[in-house]
Amino acid sequence: MINLATSFSLSKNAFGYLCLKDEFGVLHEQVVPVKAFPISHPDESIAIVDRDGHELVWLDRLEQTSSENQQLIRAEFATREFMPVLTEIKAVSTFATPSTWQVETNRGSTEFILRGEENIRRINPKTYLIADTHGVQYLIQDITSLNKHSRRLLDRFL
Image (cartoon, rainbow, N blue to C red; front, top):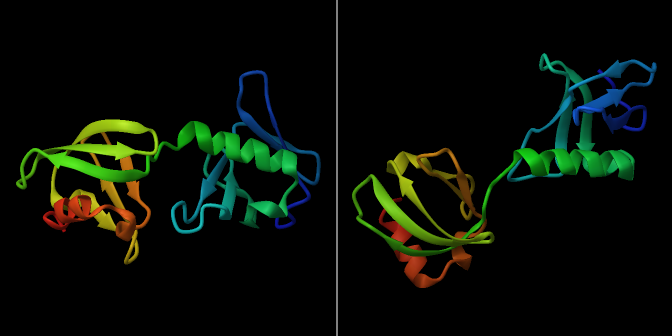
């Protein structure tokens, strides 16, 4: 494992896979950046692992590496991560589950099915994750920022 964040470089190969060249000049193809704490600390505690899951690089903070490496890591996360931020709960079909939720997110209006109350996870006192039946995770960054109607609807399921 490489501990020095400046002793590696990232690039994309002809097939679009992320590759890492380590301090010894060894090229590792199809590497993947992984966040240890994707919600609470998205730019901290990042590992770059090989295709077998072995850790090659550990970054305490994304800023520890070059801006070129940062751009490639961020681009890789953007292609893999899809977590809309829920900003408003407009309506729910029923207070029993499964129920259909009509919501507003940072990516627009949508509708999803909540299978059960266990699909609403509390991350910290203000942050929640809601998983729909398709596995899409909706993030509520700060429950206190929701309007009164949204909080009242959400409280029925907590």
